[in-house]
Image 1 (tube, rainbow, N blue to C red):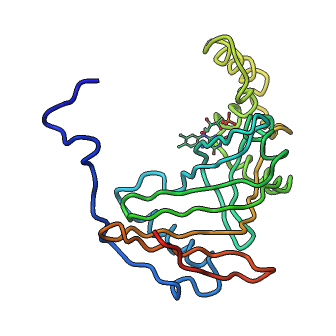
Image 2 (cartoon, rainbow, N blue to C red):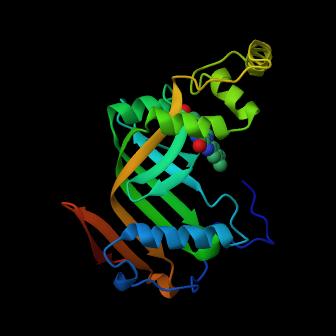
Length: 219
Ligand SMILES: Cc1cc2nc3c(=O)[nH]c(=O)nc-3n(C[C@H](O)[C@H](O)[C@H](O)COP(=O)(O)O)c2cc1C
């Protein structure tokens, strides 16, 4: 690879993080309140596109972890919700190995959140409610795509899309059984705030029985 002389060397790329600070008292005994605050700020921050994009890590049967981006669609005291194809690679992996990881990185706020939790299927009612709120094209997509499977070519998808468009013409599109929500119940939520000189703030909240506790970690 050639080095562009106008650009700094990759190894020299670094920035000083100075936007905010984080202390253990900001968490109190409820990390979801701080999550709510940081998430709202990320949504308001104009340099951040798709604040709800999060990385989901699962373990496959081959023992390798695999991370991919999914969209957070709801959160509450019970946990974090996204929607997917239950037969996808991630779906199969998380039903077999429900201990999963989530992470958010919001560069415009110099913040990262890392979550450990257990995945479970969201109730049918909540999945239906969300599915019915989606645009028709997205609803159709859930029927069309055999997510994570090998397909011959793009035409395969487009032909199937046309076939199903005709099938459901003037009809309500039902939620396919293989598509719905996943709830991740957190057991650990770490908040990271970038600070100067690599002396970042890290506050890790963890469940101790039914109570949340917090500890400061070295950066
Ligand atoms: C910004 C962004 C948002 C995405 N949101 C979702 C999502 O909410 N659900 C989903 O199943 N896939 C989503 N994807 C696609 C996944 O990253 C991934 O390609 C797909 O789910 C198949 O993953 P798997 O084969 O590991 O199961 C998104 C991708 C990007 C880049």
